[in-house]
Structures are given as C-alpha cells and as structure tokens.
Image (cartoon, rainbow, N blue to C red; front, side, top):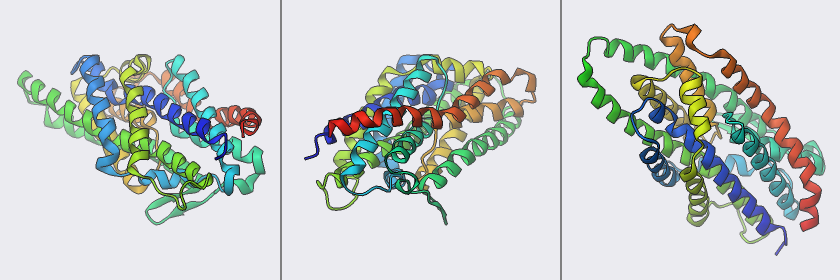
Length: 336
C-alpha cells in the first residue's frame, strides 16, 4: 500500500471537518440571527440533518469532484492530499477572519494547483457541461458562478411573495413562521450535508482506486458515513463569527427573512446536489440575503462593503488554495 494513502485520506477527512465548521454556521446563521432559535439547538439540528443528508438526497457530487484529477495510478494520491491540504489551509485562514469562504472553490483550487504543478494541464479534467450535469473543472466553475445568482433571484422573489402574504397578518403568525424556520433550516442542513459530504467521499473513492484497493470508482456506504461523521463533528463546533457576518452584517435579518433565506438556499443546493454540482453553501446563503435586502427595497441597508469583501474572498480562493497546494506537493511526494 502506498505510504501516502493514509495521510491523504486523513487530510480529506480534515477537510470535511473544517467544511462542517464553516458550513454549519451558514446553515444556522439566519435561524440564530432572526432569534428563532438559540445557538445550541440550532447546531444540534444542523448536525443531525448534515449526517442524514447524503443518505436522503444521494451523493451525485462525488462522481463530479472525484474525476477532476485526470492522472492515473498512484500519482493521484499525493496530488489529492496536497489539494485537500490547500483547501483546508485557506478555509481555516478565512474562518479565523470570520469571512464566509467557499469550500468548493478552495477544493477545486487546491486540486488544480497540485495537479498543474505535477503534470501540467493534461493532469486536469477540464470538462464542460453535459445536458443536466456539470463535468470537470469548467462544469464545476459554471455551477459555482450560476448558483449565487439563482439564490439571489430566489431570495428576491420569495421575499416579495412573503411580504405580500404576511402584510395583513398579526403577531400570532410569528409562531408558525418560526416553526417553518426549523423546517427550512433542517432542509438546508440536509442539502448541505448531501453536497459537502459527497465532496470528501468522491476524493476518498478516487484515492482507493488509485491505490488499487478497489477496482472501480464506488462511493460505498462506509465512505459516505465516514465523510458525514467528519462533517458533522465540525458542525458541532460551528463558526459563530460567520453567523454574525451572514446573519447580521450583510443585511439585518428578521424572522420572515430567515424563513425565506433558508428556503431559497435549500432549494438551490438541493437541485445542485441532485445534478451532481458542487456548490458553496456560504456563497448561496449570503446571496439569498442580498436578494432579500433588494426585495425589501432597502438598498442602502445592504452593507455592500461586506458583500464586496466576501466577493473578493471568493474570487481569491481558487488561486490562494492552489498556491498553498502547489507549495505543499513536494512534501506529499516525499511521504510516498
């Protein structure tokens, strides 16, 4: 067995753990910021549905991400290890700064940086779009670009509909709306779990094929469970600085806003998961909140400086994670 296989799998699981820390904050941000739930119960809810999400909604994303590196044989193993390391390092940096970043951008950037340094452009499956599914790096980047726009539009349209629906209601509607937030938050956490668990599961499946421990790419229940547990353990720790950024600093979220943000975000991530498109939960939730601010016609209440800061972080994530991965690749080669 290749000596670098175990460290590479461990690094992928660390990525799932860190991803859970940042993603959990996003899944619970509007639930907590709108005061529909306290942080403790919100995190328990997110952890539970993160765990069951991939079993409910499948792991189509695994096949998309597991095929990004086009190398064959054991040369894949240090590249994936370095790619996961680059993603972890950049995600931790942005997490410490309480900036919502994209784990999908970071992982794609890490894999790109390591693969390009290892064997040039031929080491990457560039792909494109097939009917109904993304393929390779280009397909993933298209999905990452389209889904925030979809979340902004969905947040805007649902918020306008909600404002009309609840325009003449009394305070007695607050209870059912808060209850609805629990439902949409659970859906959001399950969708996040399905999409993000599959990212790690796909890489582990690719590592096992490269090490010749399996004859074909297969995401077994054991791989799904291991990735889901790592993601869920990260979820239990959460990232409350990101909760503050998403739930309060972009636009002051109220109860009905939380319901709309969670519902629109969950719908976008759910569809992406079924199509096999890796997406960023942080990016989608933040974009839905911008849509809500626009729907309320309170342009000046949207803190555009925070939006610009988040956008710059997303744009710099791929090259930053790629650079870190490329620098670490020689060390991963030495381990093998």
